[in-house]
Image 1 (cartoon, rainbow, N blue to C red):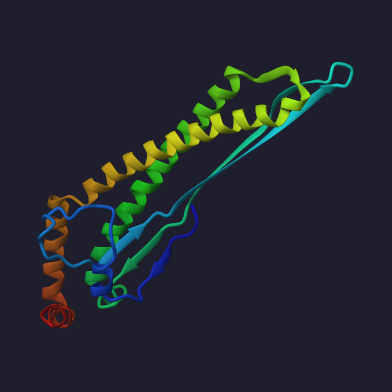
Image 2 (image 1 turned 90 degrees about the horizontal axis):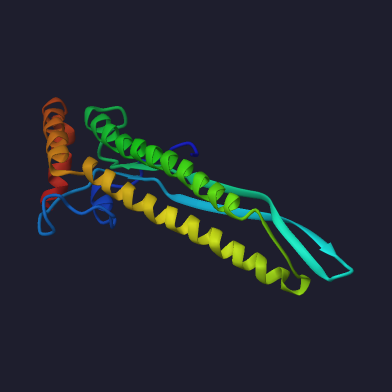
Length: 204
């Protein structure tokens, strides 16, 4: 996980136009405004290296794994509407909510990184050595192995994204939103100037 990047350059109207993966818990027809967004930005890379031994007398080869390297990267970004002064009451409440999203992403990534490692190790142990086979088939054998590993990585990534979506939906549930809304209302009382500034933009 790289260091969290923060973006306070956009207004809440701009953030409200961003297409989000989660659905509006108040319904698709409800008019809502977004004051913060957290994005994990996942990326998975994997590289396989092989060792090959060839018998020139029979023109046959054996192949086995040298290394299987997997890198799971998360580049978190948190955006908070520029109407909320950095460090202010509104800002802190929105930041707390968005950090919950980042925490979920970290939990899910750690869980599925371990699972992926176990799945790949199981595949390596299932068949550690390939051959002997005609040396001319070397590239074909390598491609078949790579395809199988790709399938394992893809299946793991699909499961991870599904689990992430389910857990993030809890953070964005109606009950959680209502609780955050109540805290924002208390912030409105403490910072009426900020509240009025936001209200004027909503009424335009």
